[in-house]
Amino acid sequence: MNTLRVRLKREAESMRILMRSIPAPVVTLFVVSVICMNLLANKTLLQLSWIALDGGILISWLSFMCMDITTKHFGPGASNRVSVLACGINLLTCAIFFIAASIPSNAGDYSAFDGIFGGTWFILLGSTVAFLASAVLNNTLNWLIGKGFRKNPDGKLAYAMRTYVSTFIGQFFDNFLFSIIVFTVFAPIFWDGFHWTPLQCAMCALTGAVAELIMEILFSPIGYRIVKKWKKHNVGKEYLEHIERGKA
Image 1 (tube, rainbow, N blue to C red):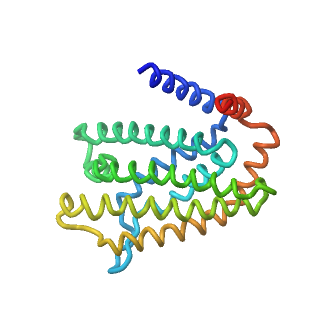
Image 2: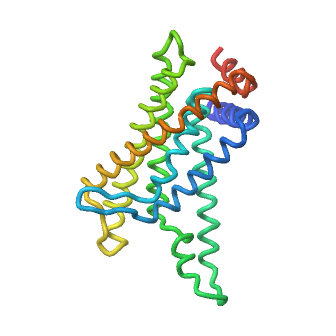
Image 3: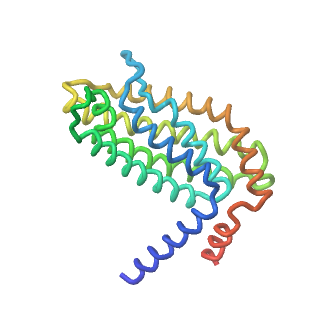
C-alpha cells in the first residue's frame, strides 16, 4: 500500500512538472482534436459494401501529430500522460454536453442539438478505449523506432520514419478497434440493426490509416521544425531533468 502511494505521488509530481513544461498550444490542440473526434464519430461519411468511414477521420491526424512531437521531445511517458489527460477532459466535456442536452427547453426544437451533443454512451466507450490503446501503441513504437537511429537520432530521416510508421500502425489499430466496438458490437443492438461488417471495419481502418499517413507526411515538416526549436531553446528542461533524476 505504501509503495502504491509513493508511486501515485511520484506520478502526480511528474504530471505537475510536465504541465508546466510542455507548450500550451500543443496540449490545447491535442485536447480539442480528441473532443472533436468523439463528436465527428457520430456521423458515417461513407458506407459501401466493402468500406465505411466516420467523421473522426477528418481530425484524428492532428491528435497523432501532437503525440509524435511530444514523444520525440519529452518521451513516451509524457505523451501517454497527456493522452490520459485529454481523455479525462473529453469525458468531462461529454458529461456537460449530456446534461445540457437533457435539460428540457420550450424555446425551440432542439432535437438535433440534443441528438448530437447528448452523445451515445457506446461511441464514447469505443472512442476512449480505442484512443488510449492506440496512443500507448503509437508512442511506444515512435520511441522504439527513434532508438534505432543511433548515428543521427535528431535527423529528418529518423523523425520521418518514427512518425510515419507509428502513425500508420497506431491509426489502423485505433480505427479498427473503435469500429469493432461501436459498429459490430453495440450498433446492431441500439441502432435498429444498423452495423458495419468486419470487412468494412478493416477497410475503414486501413483507409483511415492511409489517409492519416498522407496527412502526417504533409504536416511532418511542421512537427520536425517544432521539435528542433524545442531542443534549441531547452523547452521542458525541468521535466526532462526530473525524468533523468528518476532513472538514477
